[in-house]
Image (tube, rainbow, N blue to C red):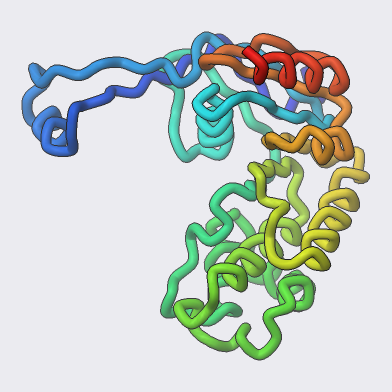
Length: 243
């Protein structure tokens, strides 16, 4: 158990679905407003040990993103228990947490603090982050002046250079041009080569998953339907797409 860094114990996440935003707002004051329930995640159990690289497959709506949001603390389970041990870096919405009026440098400190780093730690990583992002003189300009690609580069650079213990990637390796994509893939490979770093990789691109991961989990309708070696997981996922 000492090596388990992510544990889901009978986790269910239920969402209330309303006909419109007005109904959702009214429900805050009147619990009699009708709604339907949707189980985004349904009684899920799994453990991921330190140093494992795990791919998570599934159609859109299978529950993958909800799993990631619960691991990162964006949302919480309706029932069940989740344990996460270690510093988590999540390549989900790369530009979330940026202040558009702050410069790139100032946002490095802002996001670093949000990720739990102390100022001294951020100072030690600052130049490495700047060099990797490759946005040159724009690093001293307000982020509101950046293109979406530049913001994504900076967000990616911050998240992969903070020396995470748990790295979560959700289709985030399509940042920038082909050269920068190769650079991102190389960086992720360097991170997961460290036996103490755990990777959870959500993707529809099975070839990329196979490059990083030895284990695969397949989700359907909120449930984990397979958990095993990556080759079998890819085969089962591909077969599910034919249904």
